[in-house]
Length: 226
Image 1 (cartoon, rainbow, N blue to C red):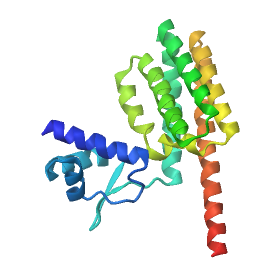
Image 2: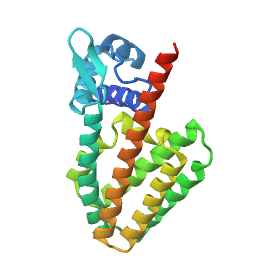
Image 3: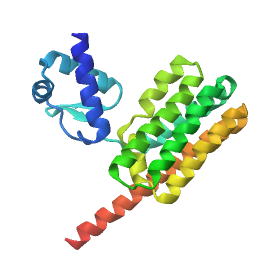
Image 4: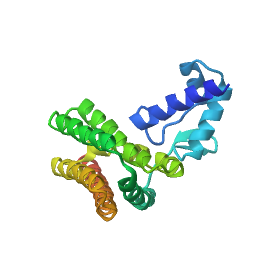
């Protein structure tokens, strides 16, 4: 039973994060069970887990649907990320080992190589590399509770796909922050590391706000032209 629940959980969660199940779309138990090859019971349990993580909402009549994220939700998420990841960067600066610094630098190199490709696959790969970069800093803290708290925050779908929304200048700024974070960690300077992480996440929130505003204006223009 537990294995079946984990299977459904990973399949639905990956579908939400990849955009296969977009915000507001229904998640019918029968269809998910048939598609994944399990009974409805593990599907129901997996949806409960996803609901607890904030990725799924349970609505009257409609049942389980992929959660929608409003601006105030993202403000709260980035406020928490700034506090927690800033603390994490400071703590990591006290504990990170040279081999981990080399890995972080290599991840920066990998993201740079994909930056000039400008394809959907390249952006997907940058997203995964960025996620690994942040998670390695989180793990370097040695604080397991921090890992659990941040795991949910950094995988909100709209946050997970933020690189698809960045302008070239915003991408360059983000990657520059990554390099500076590695430098700060290597110098074991907690103040510097925390400050860069704060700037990095505030810039990320500003990029999402800019992209959201642009999308809203485009939608208004499209409606006006109909």
